[in-house]
Image 1 (cartoon, rainbow, N blue to C red):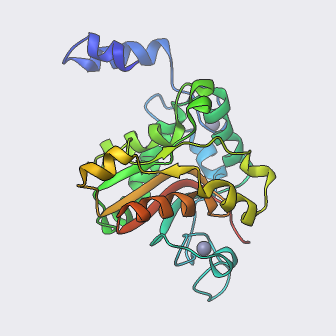
Image 2: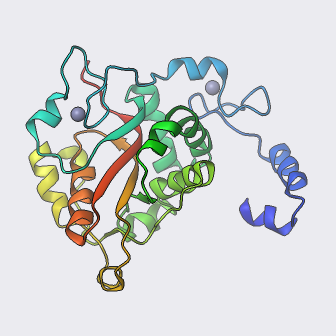
Length: 251
Ligand SMILES: [Zn+2]
Ligand SMILES: [Zn+2]
């Protein structure tokens, strides 16, 4: 689609109009064609999503019930990232929608999530005062299977909407890990510790950013973000934040 727009040159509005006629936008929740035409999601479907509301965990940004500062996961497990925020509670609708992006190739749904995150979380993201977004990488073999990294696609949209650069090469995933969903939190972290690293070339070059925002689609136990943070901090990054589309809730 991008190629088509650049083919039409500077007057990309014509190309966009043609594209929206040929491929009308589909709703990330019900997958039907969205009305009104310029919307990114059906108004009724937006109501089925559960947006994260205060009070939230001071560390991971997960909704928590009472006056506690931290959620059970953040109390129980060491956290080396500064803090994070997410758009949605991980309910059945969100889970299905994100699966369709990852396993069904519906990367255009990220247009909605990127926009919603920029609108609702934009000021909190700016307050992090980070220099760049860093997508959580997928293993090259999974990248070949899927054709794209959903976190990188989301980071690109956020970067454009919030005018922040995206550093796709700062973090790499070397080891192919077992499927995380089959493991408990301790096993997850052990499984992931060795998986992420900053390339030697980047370390030698120096000039690493001091402060970054990791981008991922789902935050559950926090082990992926924690493993990425450890790799970044071991290389010299000082502050690590994260944003994600969904986060598991305690309630
Ligand atoms: Zn819908
Ligand atoms: Zn937490």
